Structure formats: structure tokens, C-alpha cells
Length: 74
Image 1 (tube, rainbow, N blue to C red):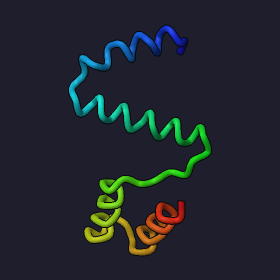
Image 2: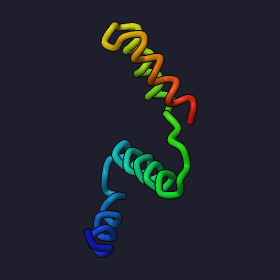
Image 3: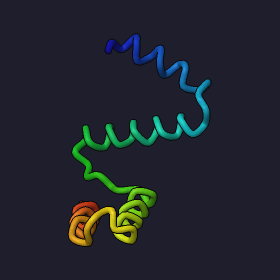
């Protein structure tokens, strides 16, 4: 994708629904942090989803504990 194509997309972003704009902003910040070598920080929603998986039995306790350990370590 060229810089011009990226610029064209970014010009259209204000016309998107607010939630989609927020999603793009969060993704862009994650990409930027990764490019700068910063560790990933799980969002409260992601941590909540992991906890829900533990409670529901979708994931084993060990799988959930491993996921949480990795997220909290960074």
C-alpha cells in the first residue's frame, strides 16, 4: 500500500462510525508501540474475556493462567 493510499483512507476515517474510529486508533497505537519495541499491554476487555473463558470452561484453567501470566509479564 502506498503512502497516498494510506492518506486517502485516513481522510475517510472521520466519516466512519465512532466505534470503528476508536478501533482503528487502538490498532494504530498497538502497531506503533510494537514498532518502537514497547511491550503489549492487554486491555481490560481482553483480560475480562480471558477471565470469562476460565469461568465458562472454554479454556482450561492452565491455558487461562498461562495467557494471563504472559499478558501480565509484559
